Each structure stands twice: as C-alpha cells, then as structure tokens.
Image 1 (cartoon, rainbow, N blue to C red):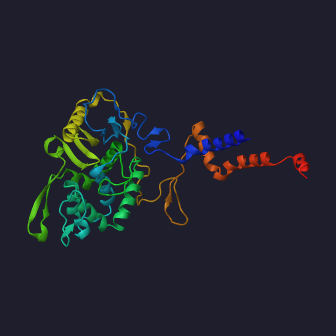
Image 2 (image 1 turned 180 degrees about the vertical axis):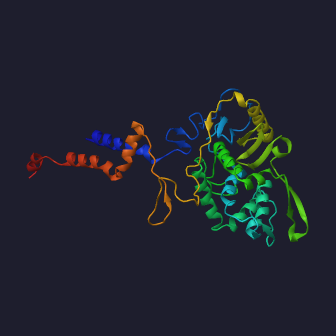
Image 3 (image 1 turned 60 degrees about the vertical axis):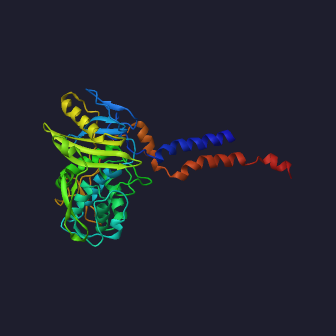
Length: 377
C-alpha cells in the first residue's frame, strides 16, 4: 500500500513540478537568443578565434542586424554595477522632460557610491542630470531623476523590471536603479547588449552615451567644473559611440561599449572583469570588425515581446475591448511539440485534482473488510 501511494504522489510531482518554474534566460526552445548561448563559461564563435579576455562573460553583437557574433557565458547572471544605468535610462528618458528643473536634496547628496556632485538646494535641469548619470555614473543624479518621476525610486525599480521583461532581458532583476551591489540584483552580458541596442535606437540616449565632457555647477552656483566621460573607449577608439562603464567591489569591472565602422555598428558587453577592460573591449571590437565577413552568427538579440502602442488605431485583425476601448492584439497560433502539449494540458488541470487519485486509493486501502469488523464484536 505504501509503495503504491508513494508512486502516485511521485507521479503527481513529476507532472506538476517542472511546470511551476522557468529558468531565467530560458525560452520554450532553450536559451534566449539561440541554443549556443548558454550560461556555461565557454567561448562561442564561428569563423575565427576571438582574442582572450579576462572578463567572466561577454557578448559582441551587431545592433543593426541583432546578430550575436561572439559570446562567453552570455546568460550567466552576474552583478551589473553601473552598466545597469542603461536600463534606468531606457525607463526614465521617455518619461521626463529635459527642460524640467530639479532641486537637489539631502537624499541625493547622501547616496553612496559614485557621484557627480548634486548639492541640496541647487537647481539642475533633467538634461544636466542625465549627463551626470552617463558621464560620471553619478548615483546622486540617478536618485534625483528617479525622485522627480512619479512614484520615485520604488516605481522606477518596478518599471525597470517591466521594461527588462518587455524587451526579453530575462536574466535581469532590479532592486536598485543605480546599479550598486544589492541583494537580488543581477543581469547578464546578453541583457546588457539588449539594453544597449534599445538605447542606441534613441537619439537622446545615443547623444548622452557619446558625450565626452560637460560642465556641472559648484556648490552655491560659484562657477562650474568639468566632468569627463568615464568610458575611455570614446577617447582612444575610432568610431566609438561610448555607452556605459561600471565598477563595484563585488561586480568588479563591467562594461558596455559600441563603435561604428565600415557600415556596421557593434556593441560589446563584459562582466566580472578584473582589469584592462577598455583594452579587452577594443580587442574584441577590432577582431569583430576585421573578421566580420568570415563570422557566422552564433545567436540573435531577441526582439521586444510587444510592439509599442501607436495612435494610428487598431491594426487589421485587432478588436477593441468593450470596457477600455484599447485594441486587443489578434490571437496567434503556436504549434506545440508533443511534450509541450502535455504540459499545456497539465496547466489546465486544477492543482487539487492531482491529489485526488492518491486520496481515493488511500481510502480504499484503509477501509477494513467486513469480516474483520465482525470478529471484533
């Protein structure tokens, strides 16, 4: 009896267990972006051997075509440090008016980590704060921008997680918009490439990422001081477009850089690098540009799950919701493999139904025969 009950319970767990969890960075057919792009610490390239680099993970991709041309542990979930600010910018740029005035606060000035110099009581334009965020990686500028937006920092974190999911960055989870080492905060070299691709498609993001110098006001508005972009690629690599650097004690060096040559725009992302990150980024970019025609893509940067809403009305085949008046997307057909079909069917069965057979069998085995009950009278 015990063996039979155990078998029934085990069968129920086998059916329901795998359906309750989906690994980050994993789609229905394997790793997001292609089967070769695993989280294993191996280098994947086809057509030429890439130069050795110290980073634990990296991705080199063409942002125009979305082709991943070389990768190393692209889906490994690591601490992003300030490269996460690329996602912060993706969320805040379309929400904030560049000419808005923001008054610095004690909370801005008191934040830990890298700062550009936001002083309590001083006025800054949103535009200048974005410059401080991109060039100096100012956590104080990030805090001021988040506080200026509706809902403050908590709402920004929520929107960042939503944005990551929207563009297919399934390896990313945000708990601090500055990128500081925080519990439960991680991303991947693949996701950073997605952020860079989405960001460089925006004119304002690309402008901030490529700005070399800006001037920030001193305390008391007594003159200004020069702020230089921390991304050294901008100063010593032909065709560089900048983007974002990062460093914390736990994350070590992280990097997002891009360059345009010979009609191709490439992005390189690196995580958990001990040193020499600019040189390694330059070597990877140069190798890819030089061998571009020889390389076969080893994966792709996924497209956003949902297209942005437009004001042109519903597309052909869309129906408006009776309650909200917003268009509902047409249903799409998905062809399931036999294994997926079984799992899909299992999802439709209520959880309590799996416990039914074992309980019924238990009742049958625990019911005492009538002959035994008569003997005891």
